[in-house]
Amino acid sequence: MPSFEINNALMGFETSFKGCVFSVLDTEKKMDLKLMIEELDPIHDVPSVFICPISLEPMHEPVTLCTGQTYDRSNILKWFSLGHKTCPTTMQELWDDSITPNNTLKQLILSWFSHKYLVMKKKLEDVQGRVLETLETLKKVKGQSRVKALKDLRKLVDSHVCARKTLLENDGVGLVCSLLGPFTSHVVGCEAIGIVVNLDLSSDFKRKNLMHPAKVSLVVDIMNEGTIETKMNCAKLIEMLLMEEENENEGKIEIVSSLSLLVGLLRLVRDKKHPNSVLIGLTLLKKVLSSHESVRNSVITIGAIPQLIEILPNLNNECLEIALYILEILSTIEEGKLALKECPNIIPNVVKMLMRVSENCTQFALSILWAIYKLAPEECASKAVEAGLASKLLLVIQSGCNPVLKQMSSEFLKMCSVNYSTSSIFISKCMLTTTIQ
Image (cartoon, rainbow, N blue to C red; front, side, top):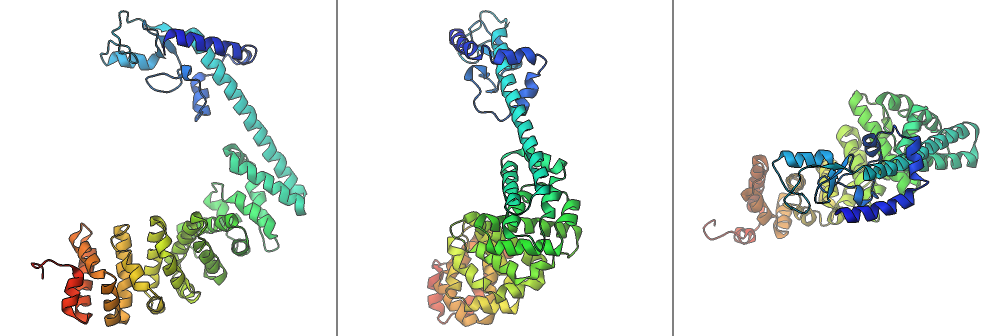
């Protein structure tokens, strides 16, 4: 920026800061500019005259060249060290390679950041004070007053990192978790869970304060009756506890076998209005089925397979891969194979998934089709080829997929040709060239 433009801008800042920011500077002369900038990051309303044209970062030591352009000292010296003899902004040849400290601009930069820093610090102190005050209130009140205090605390935790830190440092999370139990009202539980899922809790804390059967049972009950936000929070909390269980290699969460939890997860998965709930529900269902084989029959019993098949066409890629993974797991047991075979349009829907999203999706889809094929080879082969399976398998074989997947596709193609009623029609369905025929 040319010097006359900087001067005009500085005059404006001097006028606006007079009696305000300079007074801050007078009382905070020892404040470190670099430290303030780091602690304030990210900050989006930094005046453009404070920004170095080279780094596009706030200047710590502004210096001006003979061209009138101002840069941060370290950046312009680095520019010169690379052998440049020009002004980076205008590309003019420098007739004088000296640099002049811009003390007025430096003072304004320090003033502006000092003011922002002090405002931030005061705000943090206010937030910390409100958290501590709310925790004291929670210890004394019950009923609607308790609900209000939890709502206030949750808003603070959702909005401020320092609020979460204050809560953890003052055993506030222990107080909140103590409110979860067999006699906790759902409205209190919803707010408490909303607070807990936003915190980075230690493994020891989760084991001691959250993995009690009564607490987990309450979370499952609330997941089935709360708002969609509450349902998602409950699912996130249960997932946290399952991860803890895996890390400790201990089967402590017996509630995963409860039909109530599984039904609640399917409700999340079927919620078409909230894509995030679908992802959260599928992710937790995948984790439950992967780590607890005894639950798989229960999932099939409550009708998970037809529900998952029904939503396949509407899922995004991330959710689709998880859903196919779940169906593949369920296809490994007899009850799952039978349930898959009985689903309307199961074969066309799964065939569409081949070579559509990822190699994993293709492998899961093939495994599902293979499981159905074993139950009814001729019927499956006919429907699959009519749905375009043959050409999809050829694409897999000709692609760069892993050898195991190619081998699987090749074997499936052979089996379909054996069980398809008319071989000539089968070949035409494959869309092969005359040479391949």
